[in-house]
Length: 407
Image 1 (cartoon, one colour):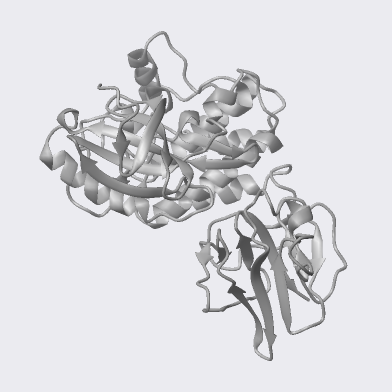
Image 2 (image 1 turned 120 degrees about the vertical axis):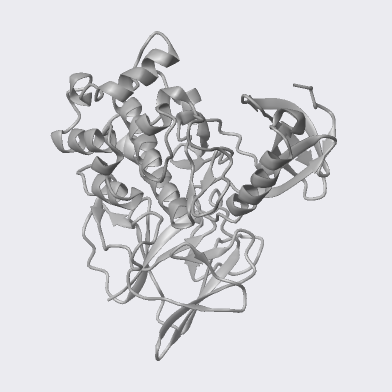
């Protein structure tokens, strides 16, 4: 493929190559208008298989760009120029999970920190009728060590629409993480992502792939005929309950796996050591995103916020309007709830991010035109349009997740 370094695409100047696939190259590029780095995937149209493929790719790119989740890489733009199609994406400097793998097993709590958010991102994509079909460590970026981002939906399929990018009989993806139905060239659905996520978790916990062979063909044939080696044979520290969940998710027959990604994630999250003791279940049935958890019981009463990553409790002061943000000694009085000591700066919390308002009917949250947004149960709150809060709701200020409790 042609080297596009130094060229300008979508107003961005391409710098170095940071990734390459069978049909595409990913570049780091600078966008001077917004003074930021982005990632641009370049797909030569001559290699794409014709106008019919491009028409499908455009449609599915639009669907993928509409995905909004804290653990899904943001797609900014899609277009075509100079005989290429391109996708402009968020740039993540932390690299991929693949680059962090050493062949040594991770302990379950460390693996869960990476796998559960990716599982919730997939559950959200499935709720939007999108199946990823290429879940693997190379497609999991690390914005921070404990903040994975699922990337590269380029092989995704939008369910319920005729004429997807691929048809039965054509296998796509990475053979090492293929589901059996992918290896056979059969039609796939959301259960192929269940298999893919389980294959990644298997590798994290054991240091080995579920199937290893001298050639990709032999690897694919093995998964069509036999189950993987039970992971406790490779790492006896894996609990029997975790092994049972993994073996179920890696079943040859899709019908024997978990019915939904959400079911798999919730089963994993209930295992000891996953993310701590649950404080409360998700307030909205089927909602994705991390469940807020505490390491120790709390006796706090009244309305308060709970930091998801640490369990720290932040009581709301007894007033009707509470400002939430990040203190800055140069910018006047601090907010009523200062998220700076809890990772607010790294999480993109603005100095005056949002306000919580107490009315007789209950609490509301209003975004104050923050840079990175305010979310309730993964739904963005528009500035000037306060959203109601209920006990157990998950709030996200930028990338900092907290729970709202009212005792």
